Image 1 (spheres, rainbow, N blue to C red):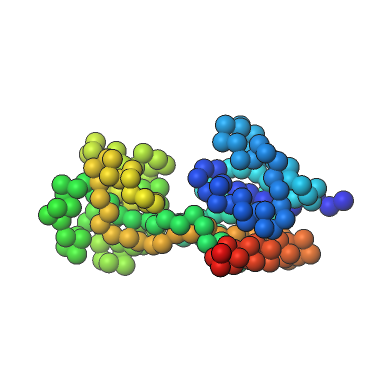
Image 2 (cartoon, one colour):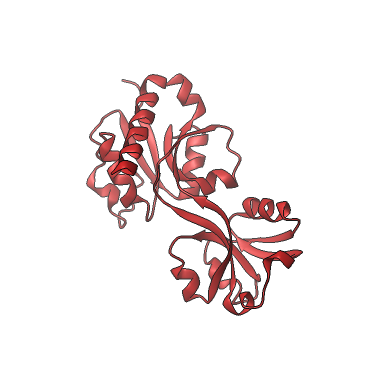
Length: 221
């Protein structure tokens, strides 16, 4: 029997949205897969030919790009930030909706006009997206790379603005920040290792089509 197809899925809030798509595609993970307290990283499914790994969102693309996993689910923000030529992203799954936004302290925003910016210091985990966005506007961006807790950076004087994922905006509000620009809308994508797409097409293509149909059905519901 050939090695099982490994499917990489991000930890966190997207898990609940992913489960109906797996179900529609005929894949039932073992119960521990949705247990956020579980420290396990690899999980079985109802199909012997498909296994799951649950890793950090940014790591999903790395596992798939390097062929350690053949398929994965990742936000379009990750694909925008990193140039993964080894990846194919054939399906917008229509879940995980949020946005990449520029935010700043509410007190600053009250008298600030983004059209007048010439130089900004920004805390973000998206330095490439951030620089490209501001360069397109003719603004020089000095990026401070952080992997989390972006919202505290302006309070402590590390930066005057941040670029981060925003969903409800609650975290920004609780830290005295407001959105001033939206850089891009984000949703989750099905990604495939390009080599596996060719060499294991018999196994991979039906999965791609199953998730395409599942995503289409979810939108129509």
